[in-house]
Image (tube, rainbow, N blue to C red; front, side):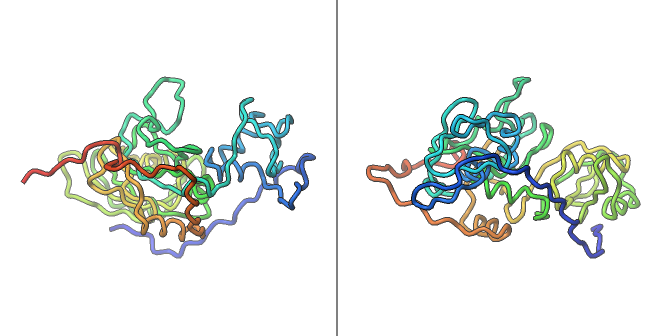
Amino acid sequence: MIKDKRPTSKPAATRIAAPPSSPGPASKPGGAVPIRIQKVLADAGLGSRREIEGWIEAGRIEINGQVAKLGDRIAPGDRVRLDRRDLRLAPPSAEPLRVIAYNKPEGEVVTRHDPEGRPTIFRHLPPLEQGRWIAVGRLDINTSGLLLLTNNGDLANKLMHPSQEIEREYAVRILGEVPTESLKRLVHGVELDDGSARFEEIVESSPAQGANRWFHVLLREGRNREVRRLWEAVGLKVSRLIRVRFANVILGPRVFSHQWRDLTGEELDGLLALVGMKKPSPPRPQPGAKGPRKGARAGGAKPRVPRR
């Protein structure tokens, strides 16, 4: 195992102040306090805060007939439109908090609409009564393995924020010989186009198989193609990349490609504790509401029975 034993410290956070709020509803009858629009929409499961801020900057959101700006707030009774369509914003507690683990195969992209017509992960996910699935980060088209998705934008935002330094573990297949000196460089740090980066740990997970060697690597950030770029920086080529763990969540051997599972209560509690969130109270059942269909299985696929 190659491991950097130096004490780590969190980089100083860069704060970008939002522009002053444009005139909007200061208060509503009953004392309702206006809330920033990106938080309201994220809590409703429409996207992550970062994604929604992009919609605001692109002029896609309107509040009471006015194009929204960063810093704008809304309160109950305000009319909010996205791409000229009214949004029905139910309270966050109307939909139970849900997080699923999806086994992404190579060849799928983490986007809802791909201009090139490539298959996307969202066609394999279970439907939601309200809101939509928000991916916690991304895996590129050639990377497979564990991807978390949630219907809670605030949780997604916290899990993706660099300040959390959440562990991500990958299985990496490297083509060719891997010098020990290269492994030492990778844990001490190399320069990439977007700054210095390194692996927290590198463990060789199996003996050399022909021209390939397998390693498990540990990261605490999620920059674009970071694992591949780190290996390329020391002259080595990744021939296969699989994410096997995110924080305390491991995909597990029984979740096959294209399939998903709900997180266990223990896994969900661990994720929430990691980012300092409390588990929301379950919503009260609505009159006439139906429970889950009996016999429904995670992943929408019949489980395989192992041969004896």
